[in-house]
Image: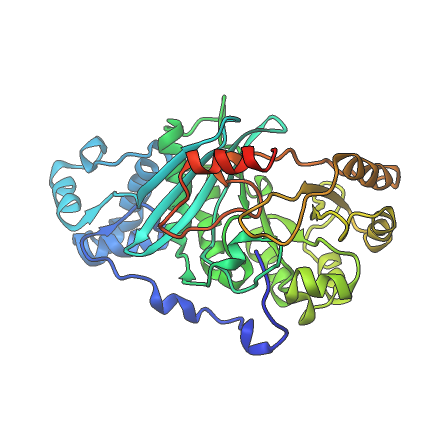
Amino acid sequence: MNAQTASSSAHPLDLSFDRRAPKPAGPLSLAGLTRPQLRDALIAHAGVDEKKAKMRADQLWRWIYHYGVTSFEEMTNVSKDLRAVLAREFTLDRPKIVERLVSVDGTRKYLIQLAPGVECETVFIPDVARSGALCVSSQVGCTLNCTFCHTGTQALVRNLTAAEIAAQVMIARDDLEEWPTSNENRKITNIVFMGMGEPLYNLDHVSDAIDIISDGDGMAIGRRRTTVSTSGVVPKIQELGERTGTMLAISLHATNDDLRNELVPLNRKYPLAELMDAIRAYPGLGNSKRVTFEYVMLKGVNDSLAEARALVKLLKGVPAKINLIPFNPWPNSPYECSDWDQIEAFADVVNRAGYASPIRTPRGRDIFAACGQLRSESEKIKASVLRKQRLAGGE
């Protein structure tokens, strides 16, 4: 996530990018529809009686989102006649995986084609505090141009639809063989909206996707296990909490407006004082629902002990934890990662003030899947080339 300019025209709160979403060239895929959309599709295209449409939609919902089926023939409690109609009018196809990379640490990155020339990246990170997190994208590209973030070098193409967001979870569960849904031995236990894009500039579709993902009769990944990260779109923060009930994360990275204006230019429009007021008003905020503050460690930029003390002062009174993120390099980036001793000293200051401040272990760096490295241009650097670059850089 990233930021571009202080002008109001650069950060509209409308969803005008949605009009560029592709219209299905073939049959409509039912995988990724909300419950109301699924019901309406059955009435409009399958001739299902309105009085029976909710019941039929509930049946299909469980097959699609609990069992993860990819063929209507697998829906054994649906009549053969209706299955034939469904197969003729609809599909259960997922978007295409263009590239699948697996890191030496087990991280998996998927480059997903949503339409010709439109791609996003999704990352599965195993064993995160006894959980497995799936990092999903909400936009193709981004408007915000945070200077430390590789995604910011890719212009915004468009918002993702709720179906395209939910499909990222389904694709990962296909690959991890996580169907049917079970509460035992799950690999994907948490969803984090920390991939490409600014989720609060696509809140309608993000909210619908969370409804799909969290539904107990389907994928059943709860709202308290879903975190939405924002660079600080202040007018939408309370609405996010009211509509989704999810955990909130803030892409912070600086403790004063001058530096944050440089690192996260959206701060020029919504400065720290306004951002902190919005955070304190987040619905349900408390010790059991703390805000996560993300702080990327940039050598000689924001990693001094004075900055650590300023961070403690800034967050005073806010139930919070701070994720300290070692900077993950990308080609031609202008920053270096802080020295490890400096990161630990910074963390110690924050810990002694009573805040949990885990240092996030870099995951998936060898496949450019780490925090701040996502970018979805079709021409990807081959893994062998990436390895040579790392060796040349002494990593």
